[in-house]
Image 1: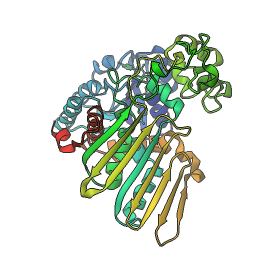
Image 2 (image 1 turned 30 degrees about the horizontal axis):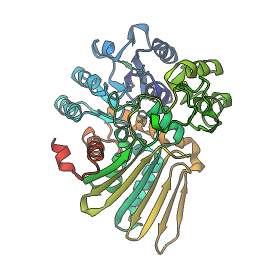
Image 3 (image 1 turned 30 degrees about the vertical axis):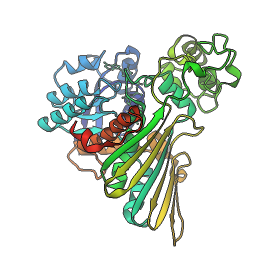
Length: 427
Ligand SMILES: NC(=O)c1ccc[n+]([C@@H]2O[C@H](COP(=O)([O-])OP(=O)(O)OC[C@H]3O[C@@H](n4cnc5c(N)ncnc54)[C@H](O)[C@@H]3O)[C@@H](O)[C@H]2O)c1
């Protein structure tokens, strides 16, 4: 019989409670949650009940949990971006192996300190670059490695953030200001840069980038805009960012259409018409998008030169109706278009038959980052239990995407100057 891995989780929000605790629920023969921490007592109560975590193993902060002797085999870190490393280092010193949400840290020195501690303690650290684990991206990797496209020359990628996701997370929400969280490209696209390194099998040599906060600023506020959407705003009718539309009436996201999961469950732990309306009336998610304390970009383009001259051009943009990523890979013998919003991959050899992979046929594997959340958890537990799953990624490998994102930000704030990756790796 398999050893049952014991798991502690710190941060019981969208990722800790709704993604990973749920993934663990489906794997009772592999793992059991034995300790939890969150600063919100209601979240602690909910997870404690759902997973029968004893009261003396429930804590009101990660710091309080980490002040105890080691309480589990592994620690899953799902707190906000900046405390990841301050939570991870003491955990490694106590002997936990770690599954850690991305980004590792927006601070290069913190990234290095974590790497040093992981090497010294010999503990395992896996960063949640979930897309690597999805069947969708694994198919893209298999096509590229299979050689049907010939020699890969260029990739063009787009991260379609979606207009309402942008304002939810990056204008009104937790990732709106790089002083308290991360620069947008690190927060949103460290996944994509991780994919570019993995898919091409090459390291990045040079980076340049342009981008800005082009729209969500006071000077773009329409005439008659109020500071809060429910405070008699006269611009409401023509505003797609109106909080009432996003959280109440939008068929994709609104509580009036029974959408009580993300993003509504970020406004209220138990979303109902009443709790959502109250959150919009009084909380941060009811603020006018033109009058928030946000500073992160809403569009950015990043160019990479990879080893051997392969080029990558990647755009992250708020202003899209659909979400997901679109990736076009171009080789000497063919090209491939992968579209996450349609769940399809089309492979077109220049002198052969077109192959279409349609993941709609396996819909259940496409939830949670195209199925990546669940596979990541399965493979992480296998790794902890002594196996070496093919896809598992080392902390050293995950650092590379962070170096690229930091180089992109360095370039962007310096007007698009070319940044040599060696400078960032050694900084
Ligand atoms: N892998 C991915 O694709 C992916 C997707 C979304 C978010 N993330 C990352 O995951 C992390 C968590 O994001 P989220 O969406 O779950 O955020 P969230 O705000 O929903 O959850 C964070 C939780 O941490 C709790 N918390 C804050 N301080 C704490 C402390 N000192 N001790 C214990 N708990 C504390 C909060 O109360 C909250 O419940 C972020 O770093 C984010 O960037 C990763």
